Image 1 (cartoon, one colour):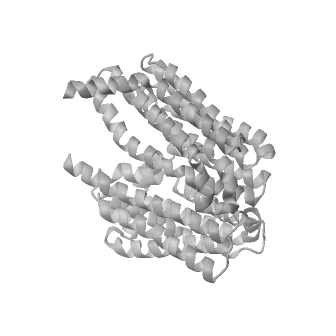
Image 2: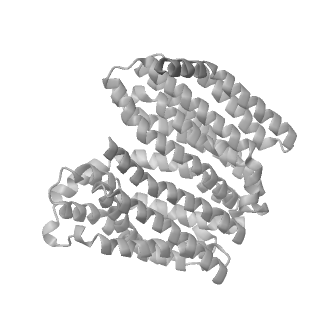
Image 3: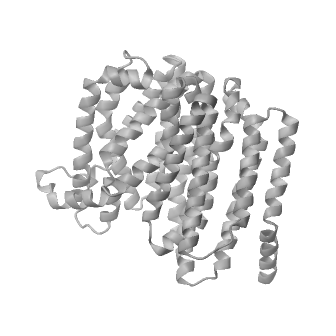
Length: 467
């Protein structure tokens, strides 16, 4: 168990410190560039993510699945990289040939082709970096894995500052910092992990490639749906509004994403623990206690963030003051996703995971409809509301289906929690008066605590029984 926690901390260190560095990068960038330039850089990030999604086609997860069951791991790595590497070359050629068209789509400037060409040239190395990090992870080299995550983020921060101060104070510097930091890390990782790489015609194994594709392809629809749910808002904002709205939204999203650290940390512990409890035939009351505790904590965190949201413009600059009205519903993503991890156990225990695809599709359709309706009227705030409501639907769909497959656990507290969080988030989007919004936030916080008063009584009784 000691070894487990040691490795868990080792693997968590990189993402946590990396996320902290990324968070610092946002206010530094926001002080040096305008919101529209930040929005332009977000389009480049979106394009990079789309390319990675297309070329990998689930083979990264297949590589992880086969790693411990394969003796010749150099051969496995070679065959895992074979299709993605070829795909990056094909896509790279497409990017170069149609660079002016892509520049127009992404940057609204057909002459801005340099980032497109650089992306085309560097993508093969970026894919290799992805698999190098996966190799470190599968070899359980926790410290190295974390160090490279931290170096990548830190290098990006340094290059962003240097380029913005010495080159241009626009999106080009942000884009070039992203490309060059990733390129440097990719080349160094390629050298560090050179002993894990084998390049030879004898490694080509059509049977193994088919096994990898057969495992990876079925995962693509779920991945695409998940990506669509998380990226649809940015795409709609690009099409329906302007880069300024997209920039505000991007900064607000970075703030909300800090809460995903809670989500990731909790999920890492909860999933194996819940399965162990199931095997040990623990009482259902124990599962409900965790569900109530998580809902109470996450609801309280949301309200506290909204209560102190006034400090955000001080961090990011007065030009980004409007993001405090975008953040409330964006917080629904990590809040309700984390809550759903405790209520979706019926799906997990029954092994009927196909329901997750249905749930994601329904949530994405809701997101699509709401984005279409709200963005033309409310811009970035409308996109945030659409995303928030879609994750609310995600939570309730998971909860209701799980309840049908498992047992009829109590959902009354979740109904009240949903109502309270909807009221407080909507109020923080609309009301500008500080006194009024402070009163509403305080009342909603009290309502949350009263809603879970039985939880505190049970915890006190449990502690007394242990003394």
